[in-house]
Length: 322
Image 1 (cartoon, rainbow, N blue to C red):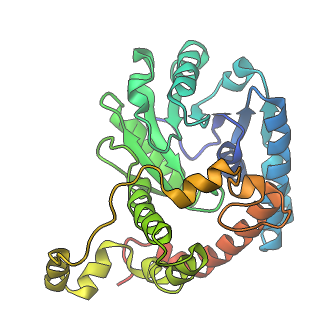
Image 2: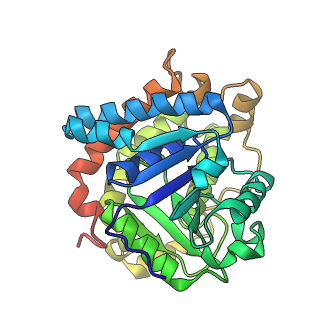
């Protein structure tokens, strides 16, 4: 039966980490009722703090204060999986990116969720269709959001081999009503679109840093002064049109341009991990966050991202700029 996307839905979100919390806020801000579940009371407490930071970002950006408060009022926190799943129209899996954890969640959803509930997985790379029980296959799809989920508009939609086609269409339409930009893949590929591109980009970045060609800070400056603004207008593929496809084809044949080798343990990355410098969550990674908490650093990032997206909304929301 087709879902009525223009009426408020009952959303169960399993996993109250940063992604699950951001997704919860988006649904709640668009009048949907959300049950945010986590087995960890500590993560649920952290989610409350994160939701307040999210509301603060939107309030400071000029969003109606009443709307921000009402969004959080539509989110109920619970450590009770049965309560979270009860009456849900859509179940969103946003737990750890570990196959065994997701497989266990899918098993429990199969046993406890309403039989007609659509099930969305926020996996960033795993083939969840190999992990879910047969009973879920026809109503399971991947809906991969990007951090911060409450700001970045892209959601990658991926059907499984047995996903009912209308569920992808409904997910596409529902996401669009919330200001998201869904992009549909025809079938599963590890990493989908953006994480595959980021993996290739990261390989080159770590090669340049590991081999002493540039520092991490200067590499970031170069990207923000060239690739980032140009990609906002042209993306990846339209840039080739402006370079000229003949010149691009010739550039690919340049045997003097040696691609970075595949390195599954970049030195500059592994050394930091071994020192416990894991990024924002430990206060230091490639940059020193000078005592800021995860929520404080995320709030600052969100304010800047929201400003960028607000100023570029026309470009982001269209398929092509030129």
